[in-house]
Length: 322
Image (cartoon, rainbow, N blue to C red; front, side, top):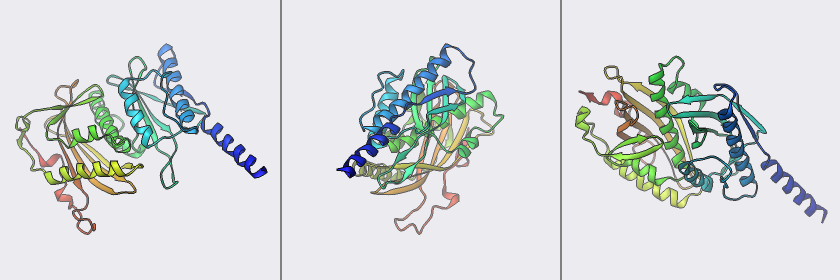
């Protein structure tokens, strides 16, 4: 009886700790005022709800949070597969200005995978100009962030790089939330256009942008998507990671960028690692387009004996611009 009571006490104590409230404070980057107060309250409510929902466990209840419908849907998908909590009672982070609002980075959370291993990712939270949360994703590592957004970048290029990074982090998180809709968009043949936080197909003629379209390894795109569908249906726990990233502006055309990402995922069912390339076009700054996207596996055989050669990896130099 005593052992049972002790177990119940420890279980209750663990639940109380997990459900602890979190106070978030914007540390720098914004003057005091009603908007700063709203963001502090809004993010505090979000982090506290993560703890409350993970301690039971239960689905998220975001009714008290000022958050967009898209962000709710995205978080709900993520929560079904990768619930997490914030063990900090107080979080202070600098706020960044973006082209359409604000962004908070480096928000620490903790999660446990299916094998019992504890992971410590960080969240990135996007907000609109009114302080409403518009998107929540897992952030890339701080050293990789500095490669994408180095100090001293001109303001216009900074906005471009923030948008590209947002999409890369959204793409990575889509594996964790099993977002087949976004992944099917990535693997389609059409161009993509970004309007705010929404990604849509956009049919355009690549010859209008390029002298010589790249010959893509189509079979890898088709097979990779089919394999992801199989993994998503069979594996509850999926971890995705980015081990390297490069953003290169085309020298003769300031509005074109190449984004090269080394991305992998792991699950109890399967794992894979490959090179992602995206050709970005910012000639219409409010409606940036991704003309071309490629996925190339690091290994050309199941035994991992034939590596993709560096000369075979598609990058910005693979294209001939007009």
